[in-house]
Length: 538
Image (cartoon, rainbow, N blue to C red):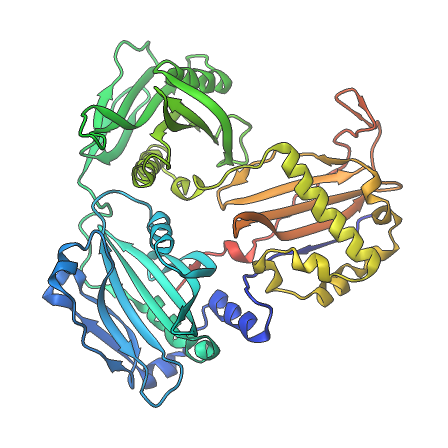
């Protein structure tokens, strides 16, 4: 017998109808119709400061006011340190809401991931992030945030859309008083989606890049910043090749030769007889051989669910390098010609957050070139996998709250603990309607009397989500669950839940431990595309 329901999440903030609607239109990216654009909008084409590399265009309502900007020359000269405004469009004076659309840019002088750039910007402001997502508009990748701001006791909502163009990051911002934001949401969406730079960038990178080519076998080819040092491994046996690229510079006291980051790459061709586990162990030993001391494991990411560990499983440790706080990340990637063994050593973010972000961006570029697959490593680096005891407590607490809600026929407490993105999709009354059928199941009433078992290895996936699946040894049927969490507001919060009952299979023993069950039921293999994973393309 199988009883089940799967709910997935849509973002939210306070539980008023208006705020939920704001999140809906932000999620769905409601745009004006083609006829509305034709009748009420014009395509603003501008070349700020008469600099062709800053020229852009975007849709603006015909009755909005183009407001001249006064930008000091000092700000332009330091555009690697500050956002420089390039246009300001204001709603008609007779409209309430203080609505405006602004565009600004910042120049990058080193490789850094767009998400890191957004993190840095938000960290230096007093803006409260309500919702954040990535997408694709007009073939450009964007990182969008919806934020809350207070100015002179007024509350504002701001939609900010960041996109990278070569060595520049532009942000298109649409803001209005919170109570009036919905009225302007389609105008802000049109500006965000339509923004286009007029001059195509010669390179997608912020820095001059070199290309490393090692014929092997196996063949290695990747791009890296010119100011990094490259050294090819010598004396390796047939079927193996390797190379190191390092970022070396001066410390704050001006001492040269300080190692800030090292990317260690090895290629192992088929026919060498090495197994993935051996490749991974050797990779770790290589770093131990240069005076790296490994500390606790802090991150495990599954980049290839179809492969068993250690293949395509990124692991990160805290470490020290000659007493300096550092971290090491390792990955073994399968190829048709053999394996790639890849490792990153970098000083910790506490030593220099910018160098740490820069090293991860370069690591991401190198791995993407070598594997032929874009990987969001620079974004995933900010996460940490909770220890097993905490994972079990997370699942037990969620399921205990769920069981109590079912038995009391009141989901208000359970609802309060959900991630805001889940709360936006539903209400506690709708949860009661959806899960009310479980009231007849005595297994839930006895749930906390039975042990919880997580039945799959736990990894963070490429989307940054954490899936926990398992069961309680309830009778007559097992209480099975699949829970998905997303890191938000400094903790892991539930964004998806599936609960179902399944008849157990004998015997009731695992690893020789009486009272615990074997992997004794078939797990559903049907998955859904969660709304927060959608790539918004227009």
